[in-house]
Length: 366
Picture 1 (tube, rainbow, N blue to C red):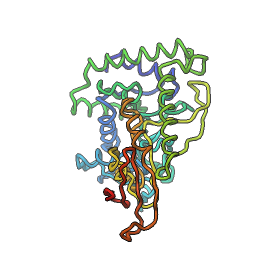
Picture 2 (picture 1 turned 90 degrees about the horizontal axis):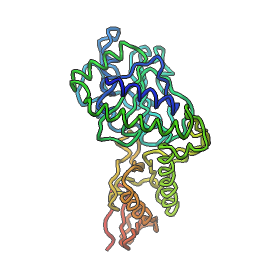
Picture 3 (picture 1 turned 90 degrees about the vertical axis):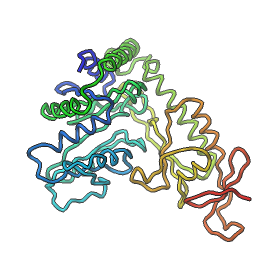
């Protein structure tokens, strides 16, 4: 790991106040996805673990790729255990790994461990804190968990640099994660590391100059990089809520205001994704697709297909077009249709086209 990157990572966390770094080892990776795999390997390959795959669980709705990543290699060290809310191992001492995503992807909620608080051995925890930055949510405390994952993609938007990092308490776990990275990727690009270091240095300089040395409050906190990003996200959420309020088809989560230590004020979270809930009995993703909007359905997140995830961080013109299309969806009839089929609704889009459909499909109204 390049020293400049490690220094920049520790510095930006200190300024923002979202994670403790003192006493932690920093492990760098080509994005946080490979670091998640590295953490699974490090935690499940301990000699103290019994000779059976460790269950990996996460409370639903969970990030859809967790399941895919766990099952991809068909490892003998770990296997997917499903929803942490319903996980119930008869042997309360059996080892397991729980993934805690906070703020959660897809619904933006703040999470705590679910299973680890109910079992005798407490299990092993991986905290995915990719979205715990003040552009998405109030920073209420510095987190200090055993393994915490972050990514430059969600911090500053520089996804192409492919840089993620883990803050790890246990030196043995950090060494195993580093070994995994060296074997699977032959290390992380120095060019990418130096570029990421420079980006984080600029962000840190900006925050220090406008919000104070420790980021707590300051009259110009909203003018920092994170403050400007938060205003963009808050504006998009306001537009989305206004669009959804205009129809009786979709609903959105409500987030309470919390005090942000970084900005020195109360504000509502503005997550990177919207978790849309559709009317009872309807497939939200299918309905969106019928109106030329591609989303990821709730079933891929371990939830009902009444839900679907939409991105709030696309390009401005894409987001505006999305708002136009969702604003044109209206439920105008929940009665039987002319052919006597029950449970069908009529949807009118902005082009004046009407579609009738049920929870699984839509078709043009003749």
